Image (cartoon, rainbow, N blue to C red; front, side):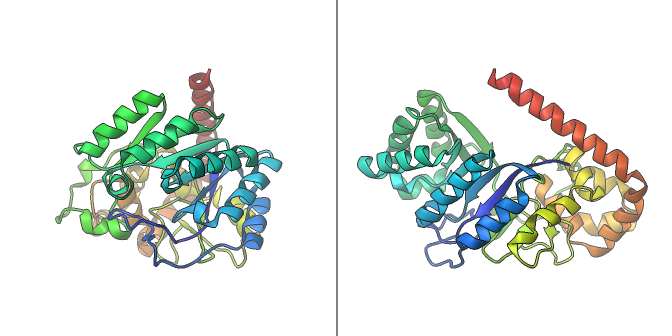
Length: 331
């Protein structure tokens, strides 16, 4: 299994308090990564990842550290990316200054969160300004929408993406963080969970709490012994922790086949227990229901250990195929 990006969760603080926030970020949320922690983590992880993504909270609240992180990423020959709520585009002069600083630092990609929650605080005109200025740079920009696609914000996001020629990603609200309050009551059927590979398990994230997860959002808050939670003492341990997790058969199955395949390896009684813990019919809910269950993890470890080498090889082939597809799309 090859990692795509190391997420640097710069801060838990954010100007916004979105109802669906998976990290519970808000103006009153506390917790930051310091520069020494960030530098140690990136240098340790550099041989295991293709890039570094600066996220939060709102990373640009910690502007100096964010720019420094992007510069280090460039110096190490990795792809740099940023997830932002776009608040800094409220005024044109400040938006231009911010973009100039990001370009100078060497930012490659920017994902701008845009949905009914963000639009409520900032308004579509802020995002139009950001895109108008940002698409004149070499930064690859995309909009990230979270929701069911039936609201006005989605229609506005589609219009903005079309107008400025940027990609629009759409994701469902997940039942974690504050988003758990938005999930309808009831236990979904296993057959409703998609049967496919997970591309998020190769996007580890380091949090201000000095925790390292092999997935960039839904893993936060996972069981202390979950395979999604990678053990580190200091951030200089990030590289060795990622290296060890690369060979984990459970993570490789999630990457190459998805959590539904893990479910198929479990005994009937364990399946019943996991089914009763599903929060919604998402891959992430299935993954957490399984990996948060120590007995299920032990059962899977016994079942998958004989296939360890085959699963690692399969994940490598899948990674190469995805990279080839990206290159073909880019050309």
